[in-house]
Image (tube, rainbow, N blue to C red; front, side):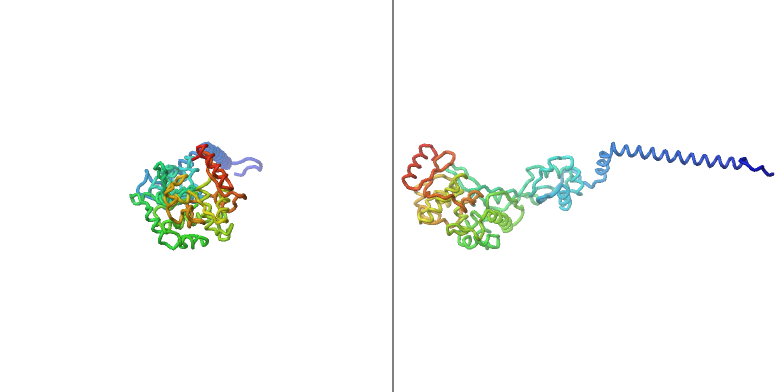
Length: 399
């Protein structure tokens, strides 16, 4: 049966159209639902994203449990970032992964204070335990501080107090826990190497090699370890320790002007180091340029230096004055009996003393005496003036 032309549909067509409409509406509702769901998820990510990431990352981070076991000494280099430290610790087996350290470090602001140097830690530590160890000052090993005026050997004061010398300080800095045992180089290990090894092979500079080779073996390196902070690698042989220290120290001394080209009043670079060490022992900083001038004036005129510090040096004595017996004792460091400089420095000379030795203040002085309790010296050109200054020093209680 046929239908007239027009907009009329059969029932089948009407039902098919209705089903198409329903499908389209369903598709639209699904699209709207997906959009709403995505928006909700985005909101949750914004609100809880930081915590969710932290929980998720922690959940999947490779990490050890507990404080660890065994011994390890690790080194932080200058400029290392937290990530680089974590990578180094993972490579050494201290932590399971760099993330174990960096994620724990993110919660401890003290990690920013980690300095270059050596640290005593354990193997297989949790990230949290590793961070705690690295920020603990007690974990720092290999730290060496040399102060101006420190001698190679231990010295004693008139009251019996003993101050460790450069060799003892180095020996102490080499200590660390290794394979369950605390191990250190001894002072004798260091002295033996100093006395027997070729100086140049250990890093003694060309401008000092000849003088060092001629010096008494146990005093060869006097003055060559400059004042400053050093990092000593625990567990390394004495030869390597001396090499590392001299490499840093010589670079410092040369940056301060003691090079092969350094001369003053006919003195070589090594002799200027000797002169500077006497200035370090005899003067407080403001007086150093004048004391250096007294020394050079006496050298130029051929007069004996008559310095108490040089007489006390081989006695390992830290004292302002000398005894008549000590001044009467023969020896290459007795500048009451010998003219010229002693054969080696008598202590570690600091930057100010070296600057004074290289550029003494202009003046005619040939005498000085410590005349104030704060260490200030009075200077004189004639013996009569000097004797008057000595009287003033006694009156001020400076002796």
